[in-house]
View 1 (cartoon, helix red, strand yellow):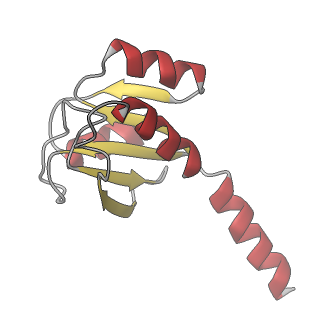
View 2 (cartoon, rainbow, N blue to C red):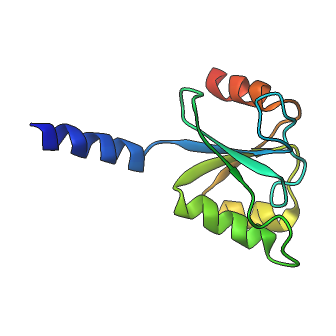
View 3 (cartoon, rainbow, N blue to C red):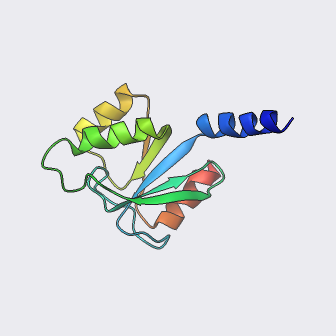
Length: 119
């Protein structure tokens, strides 16, 4: 029975609707970044609005291909949605072709999460 519960937990995590919020800082009071691919941090949020993880953007200083790196990271982490204050045309095309939703939101990380859970 324990293995079944463990399996259900793993499967739920694999198919959870995970949202990533691009951020200028690593606190909930930080502003949502206008640079989706080159922001300072990413907040990983579940459908309940719980922050699961905050990571520093390892690709913010790459010379080219930051959008590709972001989309690859979203796919690797099974994220289905990203929130940022703005998106470039190249990134929008890449997100759409990979079935990743995007939302433009200006304000704090906290307000972005509140907007997310109201949907």
